[in-house]
Length: 244
Image (cartoon, rainbow, N blue to C red; front, side, top):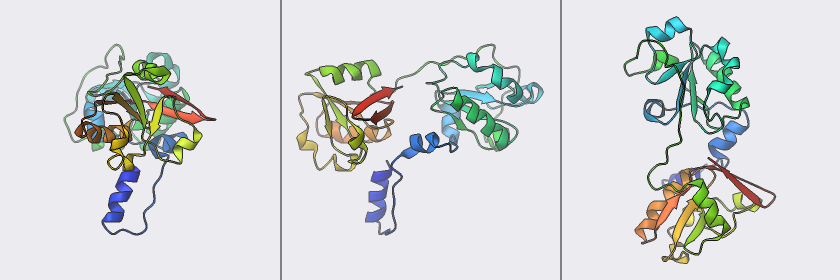
């Protein structure tokens, strides 16, 4: 998305435009905080953790939040389902508390952790009251137009009816690409759409799925059946791996 946005900025007349290619995965991997949007906290498929004391939580908390006081969090790793896959959002009395919890779940392997900045004080909607649910549950939900990781990997292994489309930048693919893939950067998709076969289903990917998702409308407009892989893709030494 950053490359496409940069291109629009240049067309609008901006001269000093740069792109942070590593995106949110690279930002998080280097130790920086990630902050959740209000929409994500309100309706995203997440695990929301309230780090405050039990009494404060029961008096009023963000809907869908589970109460795990910060002091108890180190002993609750096993209570968080699919910690490596679930997007975990934390909030507390202070940003410092939220940052401590955020770093903790990252060490446990959470790749999609984030912070709700400001806690209940900045929440614009109504608050819920009462005790925390007895159990924390989470299940991966595939969105419309997504391809499962299992089906994507079958196409990588070889499926004559499908083709992998890599929409990462030229610099990114120097570290490796999936087998049976075609590389066309996102900002070149419309100009090079004729290079893609219309008799095969296209499975598009990038590093997270965000840019690939932007490519799908252009593919469908050209009469090409397409789905997107929403997963973390990492390539090194010529080999690529994908994890949901």
